[in-house]
Image 1 (tube, protein in one colour):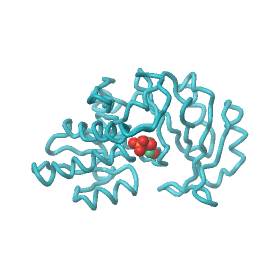
Image 2 (cartoon, protein in one colour; image 1 turned 90 degrees about the vertical axis):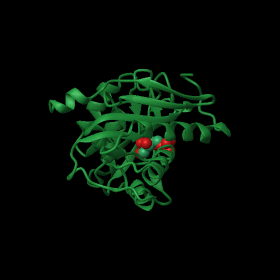
Image 3 (tube, helix red, strand yellow; image 1 turned 90 degrees about the horizontal axis):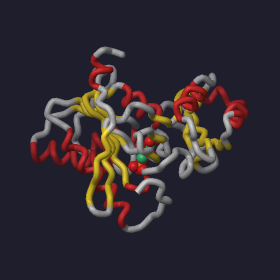
Length: 246
Ligand code: A5P
């Protein structure tokens, strides 16, 4: 399945739905749940809302974007914040690319900063994707989003080029795209990302860069919606590290 070229066909929406609605099976009464952003997690949010209505599931949720906050509110999910709940039991989120060792590229939807903060505050991070998202190496099918402070300006482009990327300021119409925190996003096109760990550090060391879309060592499980059902890729359980405050 890995390495397949992205292709859009009638099966993709169903694959997203299969993955999205499978994830709430890991949610238990009384949990604090991080809610990701995107069209796959949409199905997760709808399924959680259904379980709250029909089965009396009792949770509070911390959203990773204003869009998710609005949807969750509309669906009657009780919301909270990291201020009130700094430790999240389980987060369910989407991704744009996933490698066999569960390293993620995220941020196509522009929510990477809050998503990464919530992921790093979660005991367990479950990723829901359709099978197009499985890749051998990151950066080949999607650019890497980097959230930057507006003040830093286009001077950052030279820094990104020095790292081997072709940077493009994300636009919405004729104006730069603005994130939920009021920042801009550069999409960095690489031929392929050979060393995500080094790149993540190098990018976040550039003054003005707030966060990038590489998610390392954060994923507990990936639920992949496939043509014939779902399959689960297992990662690491983060309970211990978080409990010890490491
Ligand atoms: C949002 O910024 C992203 O990280 C999303 O999680 C990602 O783009 C997945 O979205 P889809 O499920 O819509 O592909």
